[in-house]
Image (cartoon, rainbow, N blue to C red):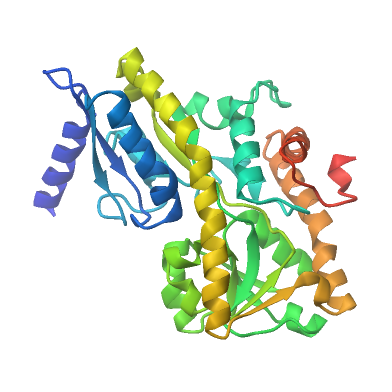
Length: 361
């Protein structure tokens, strides 16, 4: 125990020192609880790092630790603030106590895709609109915490996928047990009368393999990141259960230590790679559907489900928006103004929000 403590303290101390070396080069330790094959890493983080190295003529180099090798999910944000890492691939939705407004992207939508989501998420982070608390979204979630963050190329909409259970009746819906990625899906499950289990995606494969629950809310495009393409055999499409979001982040202390030309290179590199990162998810979804269908998987359009099943599933969406807003407002957060801003940004990006959402009226 003592040896482990000494090692941890030594590592933290080393990471807290200057990232600028004596010869002027810069070494940044980047961590991710996700694997190096995950779409965010392959599509955005890795190309971003490569481009930063190119733009700085090799002055910047990265040491990478993925797959929970150094830091596990959802501890990435803490790692950049306590000095255990310089840069991290962050998933703020997994920490609603720290980032309560970040779950807004998980609200069900009428239509969107990775390009729309990436555009809207980036616009939300860059928005100068002050919410009810007098602060922008970025200030509320990251600036006040001393963080510098960028969006990654975002993935596809979440769908309901199961290991075989079909949804042909209201009883089928109400007897579901699904893994939920955020409080919003938990709210939807409660409003639609089925069971939910909340856990990080990295823990799902074993649980699904053992039959701990029927399936999950998950992005089809991200199946291959965890091997789910060999577990999910039934998916309901054409109903959107929101998008998970990710960020590249560092502390403002580390950011401010970087020379201006390196900061410019990081900003430029992100803009050059972010939509290629979103396109990767578009391509992966097509690949996953083709693979699954070739191996007996079924994709059922929501519009082809029985009418009473459609009514049941749609019935929970309006209340879920209301419940999320109410939860935030009860916590002293600007829930209503955030929901309205997000809906506007989605529409501006080419998406659609569900009709008749009470909190948007």
